[in-house]
Length: 272
Image (cartoon, rainbow, N blue to C red; front, side, top):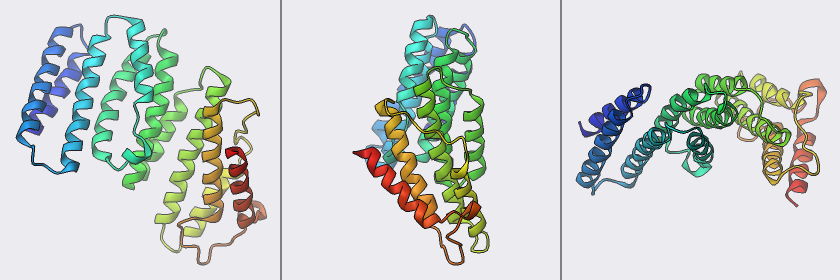
């Protein structure tokens, strides 16, 4: 009952933020915070997973409060948007799917609202793209490939980044998320469909628009490129896929085993 009450109060606060009723929203947020503290103290004997979930819920409430406090200034909103762009689940945290899902879906509502402003559109779109990619990864972890695909589509629709290097890093990261999803689909496919699914995943790497960074690109882009290359090697190798009956020669007669070695060596070279 306490959890339902808290969820109800945060939902009302989210709706209240659509109007000038800033103080009303603040009251609802404070009510959610007080409810969290009461719920937390009453569940001191809960397991680690349950307590971590409660902490993630607190993050959702805090973000509503942050948005409410930034609602009267463009600069404050811009700083908040950039902060949220860095506050995304790490690889180690992707296991806490339910909590992060709630946080990011709530955040999307507020980001979309701020992206309407021409002054904030570029910053909001960049953080929206990062959020869509995180949601796609969470959906993939659940095995919900329909939602994972939809989040990737939303990321593509959010438009290009303002800087060439930023756009390169974003494109590489999106490609990596796309490859992980294609490989996961191949792993989960029935034995009769795995070959086709793996060929599709390898086909994504044969596209002519796969980005190749310049030698003077940023460290961020280099990391994104290295990740993409290692994933490319995994896809060509069919890592984790039951490859019985899967031809090692991919699209266009490409020798996948050879390509896997090449991509792995490229990734090691980038790492040096």
